[in-house]
Each structure stands twice: as C-alpha cells, then as structure tokens.
Length: 313
Ligand code: NDP
Image 1: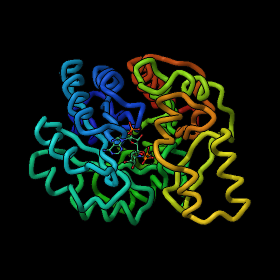
Image 2: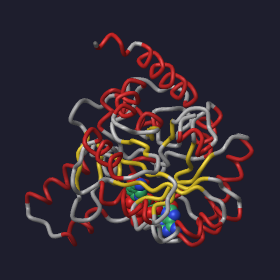
Image 3: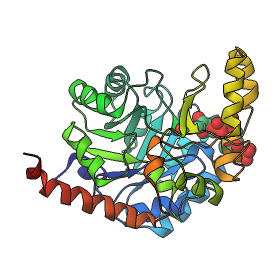
Image 4: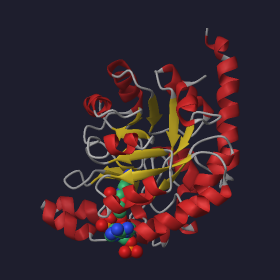
C-alpha cells in the first residue's frame, strides 16, 4: 500500500490543503468522503470556530480528516488543546518550528506532518519527529519559501534528504502533475488552489470567479521582507509594487498590509483591497467542480497516465 494512504488510512494519497478562509468543514468532509484527506484551515478560525467546525466535520464524514495549524497563529495553545480534546487523528503544521508541538501531539497518538520549502527544513522536521513532510514549491499560493525553489527541484532534493514519506505541493492540479511528482519521489500530493474552485470551499464567489479568469503570470510572489506570499495581481498588489518602487521599509510594507487583508479578499470578496492567495496553477483552473469530483478526476487521470507511460518510450 502507498505510504501516505497507509499513514492516514485513506483511499488515495491526495490531501486537500488547509487554506485559510477556504477550508471549512464542507470542503474537508467532501474531500475525505471521496477518499482523499480533507483538512480544516484553522489559521483563520477563532478557537470557538475551530471547535464548531470540527464537530460539523465529524457529523459529515466517518472518514479521517485533519487540521492545518500555522505555528504563528496567535491562540495556538487553544487550537492544540481543541485538537487533542476532539481526538483529531492528523495535524499539518506550517510556518514555524516543527519542534514546538510535534512531541506533544505525537504523545497523544496524532500523526504530524510539517510543511517545508527547502531540503534544510525537511531535515529539521524529520529530526523533530514528524511522520511526513509536505515539500511545497514556489508555484504554491499563500505563504511560500524565501528561496523560490520550484516543486520540480524541491521534491527530488527532499526525497533524497529524508526517509519519512514526502507529500509534494505547489503547482499540482491534475493527475498528470500528480504522476510527475510521484516519479520525482513524492508519496502523495497536497492540492490547494484547485479545491478553492469548488462549491464546498468557503472562499467568496468573486474570488472563485477571479481564479477561473486567471491567466499565466497573474499570480505574484511578494512581501519577502515580511512573510513571502503568492497572490493574484490586483489593485492591492499594485499598491505593494508602488511601495517597492518608492523603496518602502519593512515597517511601511507591514502598515500597508495591515490586518485582515486575506479575510477581506478571499472571504468577503473585496477584489480591489483584499489579499487573494492562490497558486500559479490557477491559470489552468477553468471550472467550479464539486470537491469529490476533483478527487476522483485527479485519481482517474493519474491511473490512466500511469498505465500509458509506455507511450513515452
Ligand atoms: P492578520 O493578522 O492580517 O489578520 C488576522 C485575521 O485572522 C483576521 O481576519 C481575523 O478575523 C482572523 N483570526 C482568526 N483567529 C484569530 C485570532 N485568534 N486572533 C486574531 N485574529 C484571528 O493575519 P492573516 O489574515 O494574514 O493570517 C491569519 C492566520 O493565517 C495567521 O495565523 C497566518 O499565519 C495564517 N496564514 C497562513 C497562510 C498559509 O499559507 N498557510 C497564509 C496566510 C496566513 P476577524 O477579522 O474576524 O477578527
């Protein structure tokens, strides 16, 4: 059996990214019900919201699902306590030191996966005792690595460095891409952007429409002085560009970003002033599709391509 399917007790090694403002119980349960692994994106949830989301997700699926916890989340202790109390079997941590919570979660029998953007961080995560790593390349939406390592270069480097299972992320939205990263050494895939464009995602409809119209080059990686982030080129991004042209300091960039930009853009649909986090693969997403269909389509295409590999000889 595939190492990722076995680790999470799921049918297909396809994980839905736990994206802030997009990944509530509707999306996570739909992905898990279809045989993948759904994740709740707890980074945008106040503690009582996460509790409610977990209860709803449990009511909507009998299958395993997990929670993504950005380690720089302000009320992280409460989230960790909620996860333990509700016996969540799988936690994906990101944006922080994997040493902080791995041992505590694992002592409770929880599988821990950490998201990394470099070989060095993958080794650090393995040393911290995580069960698997997500190797997320430059193409990915949202928070991103500083080194700009692409998925094509990152996955084989991480594969070579660690013994634990590797989940590839960044630029993956099809069964063909899944096969490509499996050949590079990944045991499974994590997919974000494609799952935003589903009826079950909690993203605002205007944001979903903008993804459907995104062209090649429409997402940009920026704000490296703060936390690097990939987002859609909109008036807010243009304002960031103007700040750079005027040699803005990190403090001035932080002031421009302010608070709640991601909520404004992704959840409230303010396409002008909001932050719209999505990956490069958005230029290939052309339809809103039920999340279960996305899982099945990716798996079927992967199988089909795998069975036809001979055509490449
Ligand atoms: P901001 O500081 O700009 O805004 C905080 C937002 O999070 C507000 O919209 C607020 O909602 C909401 N929120 C939810 N829970 C809390 C809480 N306990 N305390 C304060 N605010 C809370 O942060 P961002 O919107 O940029 O990011 C929010 C979180 O998501 C962070 O933890 C960040 O690390 C994570 N994140 C992860 C990304 C990834 O790629 N994994 C990408 C971007 C962010 P309200 O307006 O209702 O008060």
